[in-house]
Length: 472
Image 1 (cartoon, rainbow, N blue to C red):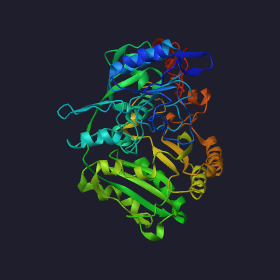
Image 2 (cartoon, rainbow, N blue to C red; image 1 turned 90 degrees about the vertical axis):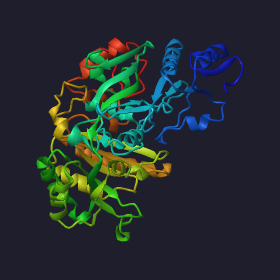
Image 3 (cartoon, rainbow, N blue to C red; image 1 turned 180 degrees about the horizontal axis):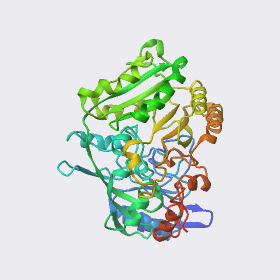
Image 4 (cartoon, rainbow, N blue to C red; image 1 turned 60 degrees about the vertical axis):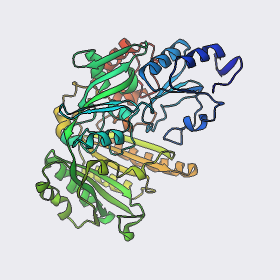
């Protein structure tokens, strides 16, 4: 599998000898892939096709021992190190040129404790994997909005999704984490052990180690009332202003994401809306079903929707309902910010942006960050924007690289217009590779503390392929 010869591959100042790689290979139960292997081209691909990098080695780990061995090898050989979990990251940090990629995608062990209402899931799991395991017991954990998203990247960066208002962020529901540090040590992080690391993991990203497995708190969620509601663009401004008031007083059992999108050309959407730009609401109500119609009705009655797809459905069906328009392998460009309020000026700019959404894979989304997410203090976890009410993201995806300059200009133009109204920073899971200042702005009250935790657990910044927080 590993090519023969004296030198396996070259870095600017390093040549790895065959013996070093063979010793590393012999320490693994998982697969080690080099550039000469048949699996290499597929293994090096990441979610965003804009990212085209060629790592020197890729190790597909199958257990903790593999991860420890890989971390030690990267540190000892002074290799650039990337960590890949569920493989849904947009900035491309899950790969690199000439370094080592630790791929956790084969580590998918899950164990549900229905009595304790917890689940332990390994770092290669996606939210679809977790939903499948927990739904059998009538339980769910707050995740994102796409089932193919990896649990690791999403919850380490915070975790906004369909269950944010009822149950908080994904990171608010972490009970414990098993972590391999930059020294190759295995540690447990929770309220009783390594509390500083536990604090930092809940929103601080992959800066502090590789999380082998998470233990999450679960909630009684089985059949929810939800789905999409569409309005035509001539109703978009009125719909968004109504949403602004509606979500502020809505019960915490209800989560509604406001969006601008292009209607996919297929069922269940009516043909006259196919490929049309619309305003939309993604509804998720987890309260008593006999109250669902009453709670959601105002969204439908303030103005006649162009389409109403809401109704009772299993939660995993809602969580996976957007998978088809978020496939891997497209070119991606995203920009994002937090907002304290949806002023009339913000609404007007968002409507203008929504009219230009270029295709069914792109959009402009407004996520509520309220309800239970607001009950956590801004310093209780690394994720500190607890006073923000919304997180918005404008994103363009396309299979055609040649189309991306125009799409990128659309994203930037509208983000530039909206940024003066921002709360200062952005949700790190929506950031591209935008530099240290943007990362710092995303942790306004907690950045220095995060740097100090980083110094303790990763003083050499081995884990720097991420939204990087440099050691103090």
